[in-house]
Image (tube, rainbow, N blue to C red; front, side):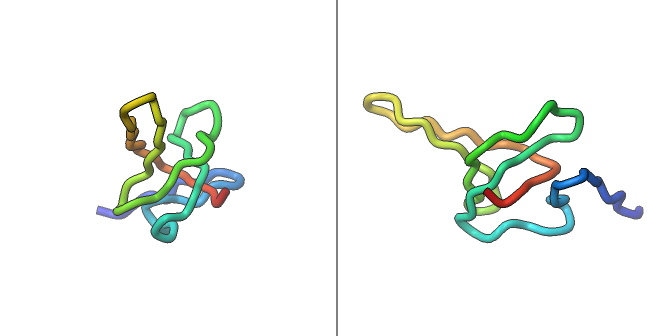
Length: 69
């Protein structure tokens, strides 16, 4: 089965090129309205971190396209 390349006028297709470990990116899913800002690429996942008093909330994102921040 042949992979179909997803294109966007500015985005980099995640299936064809991965960001560097620890790189801060903007991410987008196909059909989404815009890019999510300041997402960190860690251990093969795109993650955001939110500090709430005594806990750390980590959200992992599934993405199709990404841009360097």
